Image 1 (tube, rainbow, N blue to C red):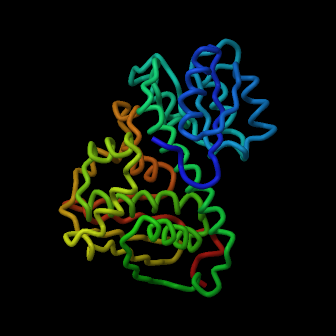
Image 2: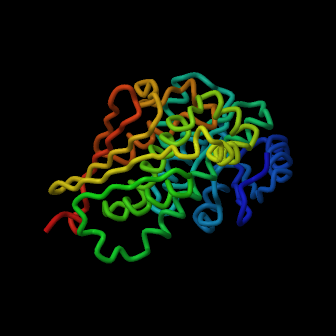
Length: 308
């Protein structure tokens, strides 16, 4: 599985065991990543505070002498420039309680020791993709809205992953909280494309991500006659200080209740966290409607984006 295309992703590897750093460096370097190494939490903190914007993700050992992984994670989440940097927690302790503690502190990606190369690369690619999507949203948010902020209601139709990201960025800018809202909307719309319109199951996506073929497979499926005309419909409605975004796909629905809260049992998979993260961090309310092919996300508008 290769690293993401474009500018070479850079990772910070933090582990007090030199052998683990050697193995990680070998696997990740061969996959196209640049890496920097830190043998303890304080060394990692020095890297992050001096050059945190260089990194796309941090692979962090949970148990280290001195400043351990949880302590470093809490420092990062309290730092304005580091709080959004994805953390992949490495641990030999895979109990649900330990995973839940890490998730509550901000670690949504996990690796167990000893490492399996395909799982390592899939998890890293997912975390880096999340970080790069966040960067893309920030760049899109810098563009002027002109008169679009005057819209009370708008209807959109889309099909591709690129269109999903562009539309999510636009609606995020309308909300006044571009980064937070756009990342959550991207998850909802991509879910509508892959699981709804294309009927891709959880294990199907997991295997494709581990093989590095998820995006290529989606694009190939969308060229097939059975899927070429399938669309996702997105509607935005503003009412006073609230913005509601409805996403509807052409699929048969899914068991959304299973994904509203992040299950520690899925912590070691490269997928399965998007809806729960969106619900927790992007919206004030998230409501699915039976059979699961319609969802409405509601958020409060920033004061400057409310109706006059």
